[in-house]
Image (tube, rainbow, N blue to C red; front, side, top):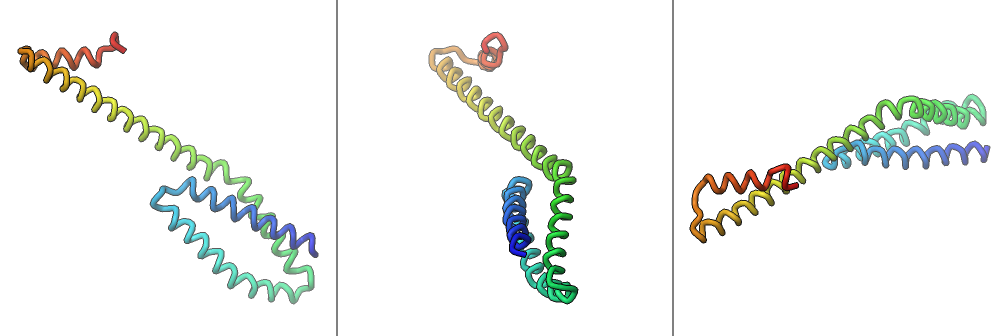
Length: 150
């Protein structure tokens, strides 16, 4: 009986940790609290219903509750192992790709802003020495973005 209880406690600790870690990865930063709150609510509800069902199962014998819990955990573990990669990991990979695209777009905007600032600085220095006109600014912009310069 003690070995079975130790097994249940181990499963409970490992699964709760894995679930919380996974939720923090698949949820957006503004949704993590809601997801973890929902999980905690389900766990609390299970803590209310579980003993009631356990009491009913205990009428079947002394090993009934332990066997029921171990069977349920084994079933849930099998379900997670069968569906985790296709459902959860694909979501995590998708979110990682989206984050990389956002980072790339942000870096591109920052680089364009730097180039624009340099062009404006050079254009203003050109106007101070008497070279004026939009054509000159266009030449500077082209030169800054030229593939030969990179």
